[in-house]
Image 1 (cartoon, rainbow, N blue to C red):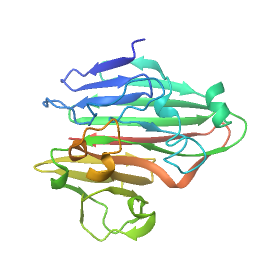
Image 2: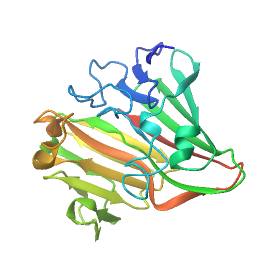
Image 3: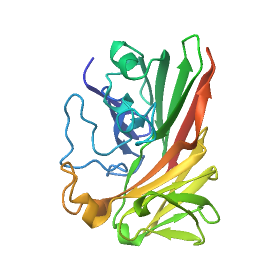
Length: 267
């Protein structure tokens, strides 16, 4: 199989997915010319290195929330294409000697992607194929293209508790009806509603999630982004990460049990 595949829906919607990480790097809704997912021009496409942008799959550990490498190992693993049609693809991956050396559990993972019209759905399924339970945290680390980060608003987060990772991990309460991105923003919002709206100037993107309890909003800002070798100096102005996640309460799967979470974008 090629390292990447493309989907071309009958109505003109398009997507591109890399087998390494089952990593979606391009989504073009019907009637649009541009990629709604941000991917850095300096992204590194090499084994063992996560692609900067698109939708990295985070499993079995979010960030540094445990002893594993940051964000786990799903985003750099080699997934296999299971099925593909014009508007849908499913990738699969499971434990092997490398994963068991870091995390001694048996699992099967499936990532499905569906495009059509102005919508994209990304769904992650994790099955415990072993004989004992395990716990994990997870996310779809979605990088969204924006025209100007200074003009962006995120709606739907008011009256939520969040952990402000950019400010020492302190707990806070969101009072603002609309979140504006000023400087470095790295917030883990807990018990989030099933839908948010990203207002990007004159255009809006609806962001729905199911199976994920939390949402991460992240932009490194000018100062922190300078330390990323795979970001250009002004890239931080061009994206905002809004990530469907399970962080506050790790998921636990009994032997044979399955979990499913999804994020749906509607332009």
